[in-house]
Image (tube, rainbow, N blue to C red; front, side):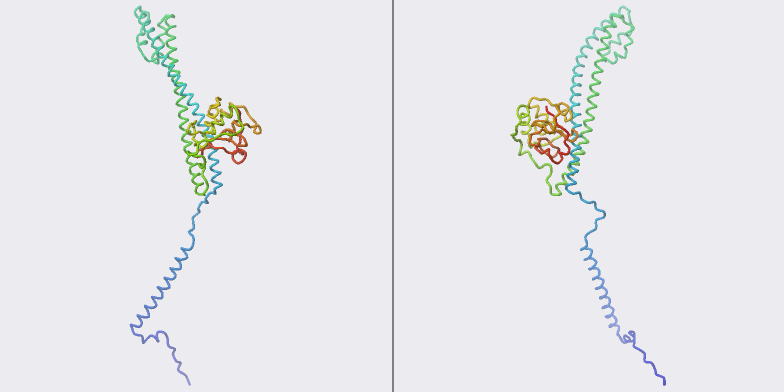
Length: 359
């Protein structure tokens, strides 16, 4: 006896009897559920992205304060040598200016001699012309330009031996006048050009130092300009020095707190060799202007025999200060700092010590 298998009801079969309204309500509910699920996923993604720190693409590591200070010291050493070269050129420029001024003064005197001799030669030429001794002489002596005279020197052949002797003096005066002026001016222009070049290089270094000081401030450290200041100028030397050395140190201590400025010799600011020169000048002793020339002009002193007032040199003669005793010196340090007293028995000045000289 066969059985008839009962068909299982399907979802479609279950919903055959649904009305259109019921189907619409069921579809809307499904769509709302899907929207809620998508919103939840989006919220979770946003929360995760906000919580995660932003990734910097290959960010350069920030230098440490010690690295910044090391860079600043290196720049200061470079600046010392640039300033020394600048001061040397300044001294050459002063000499060139004096030479040029002397040449100008001499040229005025030569010009007077030239005019006097030209008058005599003109009279001599006029006499020769009247006597028929020569020709072309009138144009020769009629020029006020010594160079034109030199260009017409062939007139020698038209004059007698006696007259040519006077003309020789005349031409020598013209030659000397032009030569001295040209040499002095060329020297002056050459040194002036080199000085401008060094000033441009030093301005670039100043910008680098300014950036390093800004980095130091960002790291919470004190900048090199923290010491002295316009409101705290001057001091008193109380050490054992006597005589000229004490006078020099008294002067140097009176400058404590005044700012460093390259090329400066006071009274409001100094560079290193400007301070030492002026200090010893106050004692009536000339030690020249630059670090190198001060080293050359003084007697060598062993470090173990240093006395107050001795010059102490650093960084390959790039820097100089005045020894005050007890392992200390007074000096004009570098851009951004003021005249100060520091130890030379540790740190930078110990490792960069070069030598000492006694005026």
